[in-house]
Length: 99
Image (cartoon, rainbow, N blue to C red; front, side, top):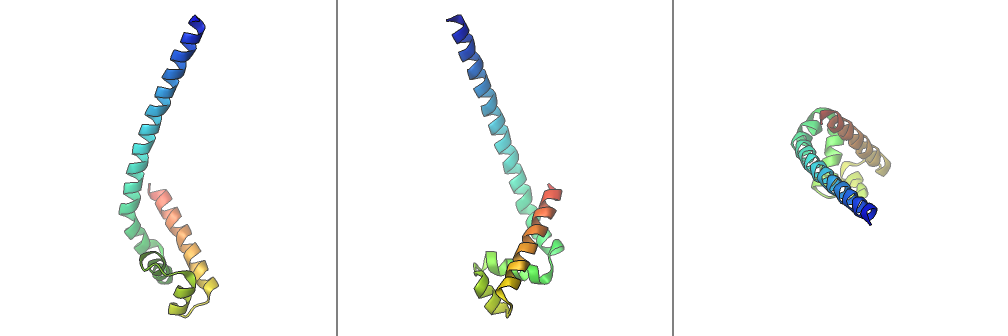
């Protein structure tokens, strides 16, 4: 019986430690997300080409899909997709190194 109580106490301590770690990790994530949101406009201006910025703006801010963007810009759908993918990569790298 004594062994079971020790095991139960130990398990409760471990769960409490995990919970504390999860709370700290969530706070860290909130801080990182805040920094990323603050840095995003700078990254868009500094890291992307004019065409990539244009595609990102149409896709995320005006909520157009790839065929609509292609029609509006007079580009092939695959070209729009390539610009979007390249922009995502540049944004991801820039934010990863900034945080």
